[in-house]
Length: 434
RNA sequence: GGAAGAGUGGCCGAGUGGUUGAAGGCGCGCGACUCGAAAUCGCGUAGGCGGUGUGAGCCGUCUCGGAGGUUCGAAUCCUCUCUCUUCCGCCA
Image 1 (tube, protein in one colour):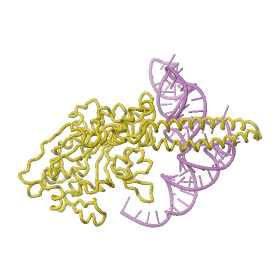
Image 2 (cartoon, chains in turn yellow, orange; image 1 turned 45 degrees about the vertical axis):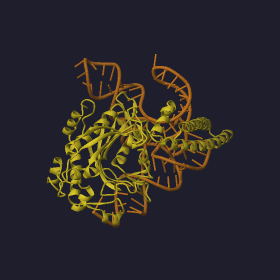
Image 3 (cartoon, rainbow, N blue to C red; image 1 turned 30 degrees about the vertical axis):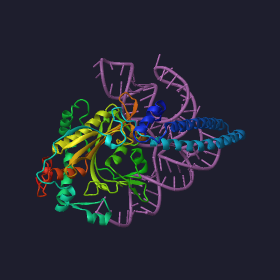
Image 4 (cartoon, chains in turn brown, orange; image 1 turned 90 degrees about the horizontal axis):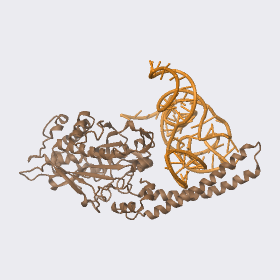
């Protein structure tokens, strides 16, 4: 949720930002008018309440209640109920609209209308050269018995799969590798060093977390990511939604809490199965396991002070790149433009990994810097060393989903359909070729 | 799922209709005492919203799990709901 005070102070900037992020239908003018309405009503209500309280205080003094004062109190009560009714509906309108406003994009974020205007900032790693025609992951996995799509469709419908055998084991190897790396102080220190972030970010390792896979409406809404129409599954008969990313169930962990500055940063490494409706993607990426209703994901979530937020973002990107480099996967980093960073984001980066069968880079990772957009709604605050109170900043980023498996089996495939396992995963898989 | 009990400030814990945003204690902060510390003593210790305004602050209002209701007036009474504890049932 964006800050109404900042909107009052910078109406033009906020309106322009909404347009840049694809929310041009939202009117700052309308919002400020609703804000005025509610503030006026709030004042009226406060004044009536004051009268009520004063009146009650006077009555209390005597032994027998003064009938005249009691009648006066009744009058106040009637007026107050009326004003409170108006206030309530004014508040509802106001908050409904305010919640729809996007977070302010940082100045460095390129302005763009679609994801095509994301800006590539670097490419790392060489695309593999094949002296045969490389197969798609769906072909490879199909021929090796690693994916069973028809049977998954039979029992759960489209966009579900059974992941089997060595591919399933490769998936767990990948996650185990990510968990080991991010919980290891030495690795963390190495990544910070390599990224030139020494002294700029904390060197505390991530804490591995297995979170609930669901969240209540209130918790999910506070993350700014509840997207019922396109992405989120609701559990019938329950006030619960299936997460579409571990971030959704970790970001609200400190709902209504005041953290001590000394506790920060809080770095969480969450693993969960994620569920997405994928509405509006009919016919897109239908082969194999690229776009599924259900997939597993390892995700970083950090809580920092405002001052540390940006460096934490850079740190999370550095982690993503470090792991991809160790695996030997070619990738490129894109600075997401205003239209693509998403409503709650102030800045965001996508990492796309080379997919030989598609002859292109495809999104495998994302890193989001949310500033205080989530924490304002979640009321997650920080008691600073000087005693002041400020909103925490949040960052989240992918460590690994299942998509890197696609990149691994395609980039490291042999002509006979076998796959060379990246060296860091050998110890988890117990073999070098699958 | 059934039955009973309980949810108060950072923590513990008073409080069953009227100066109670809330006694007391612990913790924490500042100060005194001390060479220093402990102990002791003194003072201070929630947040949101609105208004006014700034060295600061001041005024009003709301918040005692959450929502609603009764009342001139609710932490206190009523209804619903959530969570926790214990017992029963079921179960990976």
